[in-house]
Length: 177
Picture 1 (cartoon, rainbow, N blue to C red):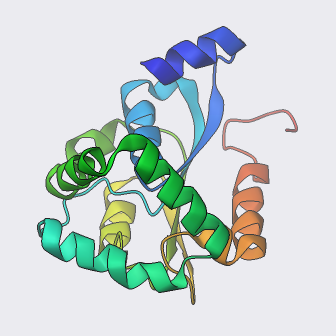
Picture 2 (picture 1 turned 180 degrees about the vertical axis):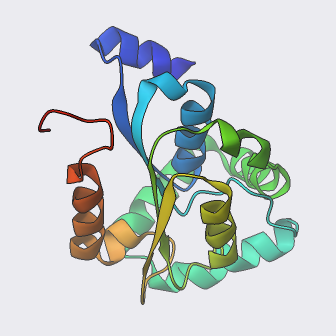
C-alpha cells in the first residue's frame, strides 16, 4: 500500500518494478496485490517461497556468502543491519524463511524476469527455479559465478539482462518505449 501511495504521489499510474532479495518479495507482493500498477516485474534472488529449513541453516547460508560479497556492498549490509537492529534482522530473517507467498503468484500478471546467482547461498537456486515455474509469464536468467548480489558481482551482465528485458516490446504495446 505504501508503494502505491508513493506511485500516486509521483503521478505514476503504472511502472516497471525491480526488487532484490527482500525488495523482490515486496515487488512481487505489489504486482500480486495491484496488478494494474505493474507493467513489468524483475525479481532478483527474491525469497517468495518457503525455504524448508530454519534460522540456523539460513544463517549458515549468509555466513557462507560473506566472503564473496564486494566490500562496498558489505558496508551497506552492515550499516542497514545496525540501523534496523540485530534482533529485528533476525526476526525478519526467521519470518522470511518460514512464510510462503506462493498463493499470490497466480495474481501476478506482469511479464516477469527472474535473475538469480548460480552460487547464491542466501536464497538458494532451487527457490528461484520453483518461482519461475510458479509464474506464468516469467523467464529465468541464471548468472554464473555469482552469489546473492549479481548487480554488484557482475554489474555489466546484470544490467544487460535488465535492459534487454525492459526494452523488449510488450505483446499489447503499440508504441515505442
